[in-house]
Image 1 (cartoon, rainbow, N blue to C red):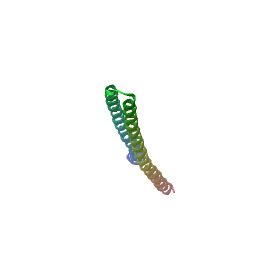
Image 2 (image 1 turned 90 degrees about the horizontal axis):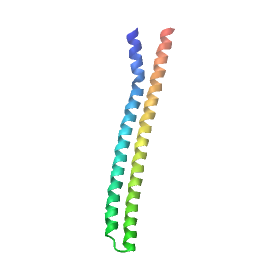
Image 3 (image 1 turned 30 degrees about the vertical axis):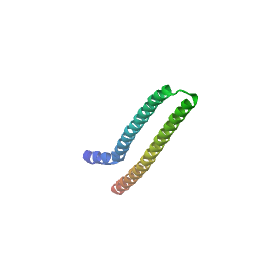
Image 4 (image 1 turned 90 degrees about the vertical axis):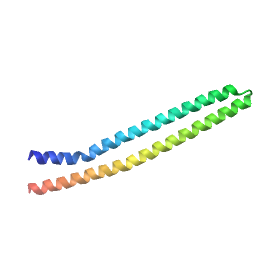
Length: 117
């Protein structure tokens, strides 16, 4: 009796464990994306500072600044798109997991109801 309850509990918790694993993967991927974004922007900032120091006129300074801002903008847009795609994938997986969770719960409830009759 206890073994059957334990088995049912484990089967019921599989979707929850799956969601925790998915969330952990998402957090890891987001951390990697943010680390890459930060290091890329930092490298661009260093390159911008070096380029700015080599400029002799105001027009060159504006061109260097324009190039830097455009580069950072592209990186931010790409990082946002990557994060959005990641969240969309996770939302889809989580939806499937929740659906599976409720389907299993309904099956277990139906089985338990039949057993008590």
